[in-house]
Amino acid sequence: MCGRFEIHSAFKIIAELFGIDDRFFDLQPNYNVAPSQDIVMVVREGDRKALRFCRWGLLPPWAKDPAEGHKMINARAETVAEKPSFRTAFKSHRCLVVADGFFEWRKEGTIKKPVYVRLRSRRPFGFAGLYSVWTDPQGEGICTATIITTDANDLLRPVHDRMPVIVPRDKQDLWLDPRVSDPGLLRPVLTPYPADEMECFAVSPKMNSVKVNLPENIEPFSG
Image 1 (tube, rainbow, N blue to C red):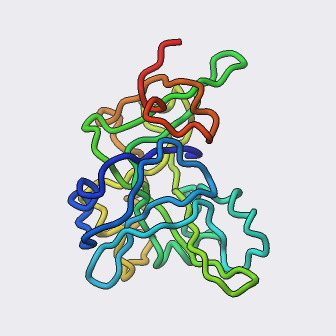
Image 2 (image 1 turned 90 degrees about the horizontal axis):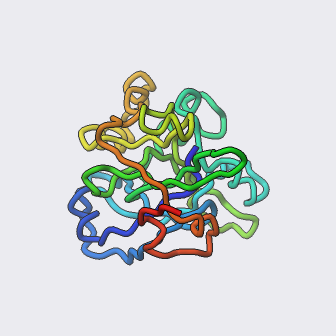
């Protein structure tokens, strides 16, 4: 699964990497992004790509309680096209959730120790995501999103059996194109990212608390 990640790259770097047309976007570093917080996603709007904020934890239109979003922070690649909670968004509301890295927990005996995972290039990337606009009882539309997971690659398998889908740059346009809805074309995107292009290392257990939002969260830890 993917339950915590971080984003710290400057807007200029992200805009260049994803081909964003916005001249400015108020993007602040968050070294401990957790469910129910706002995440930054890339979406296709007509002929342009744009950055938008969205709440992490997808709420399908029929949801009654916003707390239900905590149950849908992730969607499984194997079932996302058919599962009622995600299939509508899968057809036409796909996005890239921007991140610089993510966290997992390695079990050592009865203790779970956090590890940080990033690309060897140290460049930001996009998780495969879905979004939906949920209308609250007051009639206000709220954007909510989920991150798709797949089987772990060789690097992550000793830590966890699942990992978030990282969309390669050459497949990002396909994933974002709302005109494409054929699962046969989209499923090949939802595969494990090459292990040799990633790295992971232990980080401080202080980041277990969502209140700890510091650059030290992504520094190697040997304690």
